[in-house]
Image 1 (tube, rainbow, N blue to C red):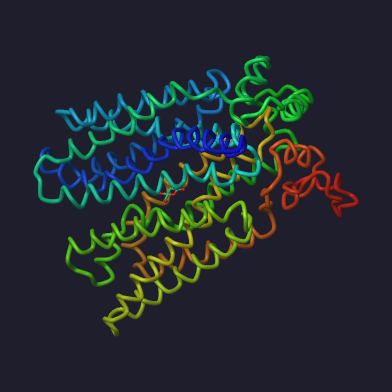
Image 2 (image 1 turned 60 degrees about the horizontal axis):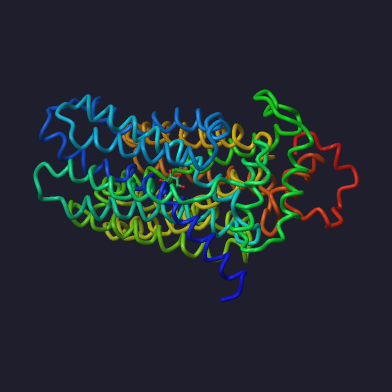
Amino acid sequence: MSSTQKSHVYIYAVSMIAAVAGLLFGFDTGIISGALLFIQKDFPISTEMKELIVSSVLLGAMFGALASGHLADKFGRRRLMLIVSSLFIIGTTIASFANHVYIILLGRLFIGLAIGIGSYTAPLYIAEVSPYELRGALVSLNQLAITLGILCSYIINYSFTNIDGSWRWMFGLGLVPAVALSLGMIFLPESPRWLIKQNMTDRAVNVLQKLRNSKNVSHEINEIEKSLKIKQASFREIFAPWIRPVLFLGAMLGFIQQVTGINTIIYYAPTIFQLAGFQNTSSSILATVGIGVVNVLATVFAVYYLDKIGRRPLLLAGLVGMCLSLMGLSIAFHLQSQFAMLRWLAMSCTFTYIICFAFSLGVMLWLVVSEIFPLEVRATAMGVAVFSCWFWNFVVSSTFLTLLNLFGPSQTFLLYAVICVFSFIFCYYKTPETRGVTLEEIEENIRKRYPLRIIGQPITTNLDVPNALDFQTG
Ligand code: BGC
């Protein structure tokens, strides 16, 4: 095995361990729909309480994401991942042994905190340890793990359908990956970029030599040091005029990922299938497992092609596919009463929607927000973008059923389709291609105030932007 191959094996192993946080994110957001059915058999709970149990994780995740920036700079990326795994263990234990519904709520809040901080720290950590030519694939392992976690939760929900009291097991199984994450993180190195920021350059050199399986890492160290020397940041720095455009881009991508409707399907697929005319509950749940499977497969496709085809073509093609699928869903529901066969159109559009999301916005949000922020503000700015994602997730998932009641499924899906059109226009004009450049090159382009669309071009390229400094807002 050549030394490059050896370093690739090691970096893949490091990224896969960190991505277990993604698996827990997917598992714990997916398991609740099934667990809830059994919790209500053990404890008489109101509809509001049910909604609260579902949304407690999202609320916890929002707060977790907000605190993450500060915590990641204070404790370092690796130690924060250890804290995340402990929070998962504590929350899962509380929720599975709960003897009162408020205790379940408390456990789910802890899990939410862990998900929020983990959804931020895992991609950040992976991006900072990756060599640039593998960064897309490695960071997207985290999204692949999210989809695997969702699939596991669907399968567990399906298999436990007839076992009473099984909600404790449903939650409790989350302990396995949580403990694995804890043990795995003990052996992983700290991010070299964070070490340099803390003036621990000698340690950073050792870590990078191990990660790259090469003694010759001085160029990479110099680049990181250069990007740090320029200015030391304070919190306010993230609102500095030169950072504002990328901060806006990050927050917008978090918004777009959620308001185009993904979690109406991930969280409510059985309901949608039943509304479309598939009355049998267990076949709706089985079809949901199918959703989980195509979600994973399309993400594998993206992980493979991101660094080859590039981010933008996948993102834009995915948005077009999502928009068409949502329009198909809307038509199927609109004409449902006249043509019963249209339920098959609804089913296939749900599947194509998931495929298109998975290879575009699904991987892209976490990847792009881990790449675009300059090192000095990366931690805080990425926290803002991840917060935006969790906040809009909360808004969409807590309004979906109300929208269904008020406007019906046809108009509700039409609304998400229209949002997709605006999202496409935004992404077309504002999202950069970041394939094949280092994080430091992206940063240098941002400092030069290049328009957002071209901040991902290698700095050696002769950019055709004579008055680049005139672009204030990207
Ligand atoms: C999103 C989640 C979503 C999942 C589906 C993630 O990228 O942030 O909200 O449930 O993808 O695979």
